[in-house]
Amino acid sequence: MDKLPPYLKLKILGELGNDLKRLSTTPVQDRNPISKVIDVKSIDKTKLSFFSQEDIITLQERGFIVKDGFLGDSKKIQESYNEVVEMDRNGDLRTSGMRSKVENWKESSMRGDRMAWIDPSKLRKGSLQDTTRSLHSLRLELDNATNLNCKRVSMQVALYPGGGSRYVKHIDAVSGGPQRRITCLLYLNHAWKSTDGGQLRLYPPLTSQKNISSSSKNVTNKLTNKTNLKSE
Image (tube, rainbow, N blue to C red; front, top):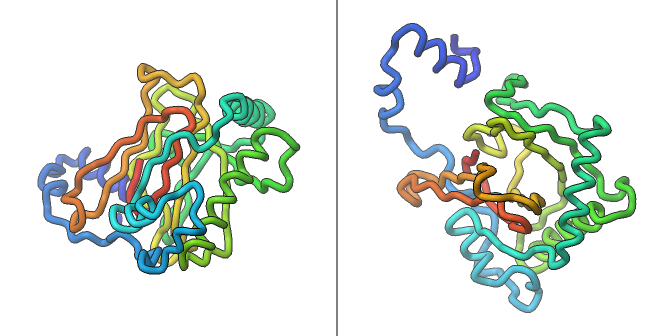
């Protein structure tokens, strides 16, 4: 039983008639405080362009920021979106999986997107390549203006096909694995409407924000940056 993924353990316990309400209301220690990623005292305002000093301080202290209008060219947004859809049609996107310290698995009811890791230098010339390079420039800005000292950037594209597809609450970086210090999400869904549903929800640590959830609708051209917070 101890070797099963957490979601499967809860499902089995539920079938056996265990009191899940008791389990869910048991006080839990905050194991995932906001990661100490940036020394806010080291910020060099003269080297900031897209971000403001207040953005960086908020990112460190609250754990996330949301910025609108990352790409000023609406045509580039739509073209980037179309290129991702084309990648999916060509079979370049694969069913996403999940992992823990000891195992990897796939379960569409828990994570239903299709994704691919991408290398901007290997993408064909076009709007998507330009967009990934713009995202890469954010890392350079943070490196130059703070003590982030980020040596490696990984990029992926993901497509949620609808029909209730989702990604359940999770942590970007698992303990003992490769440590992701900052996650940056850019929404390209240019035709998104509120009736389509879908949103990013962040769960700040219990000790810092009393477990208040923060939601971000998938509005076009919205950029979300976050440190090691639980999200879905």
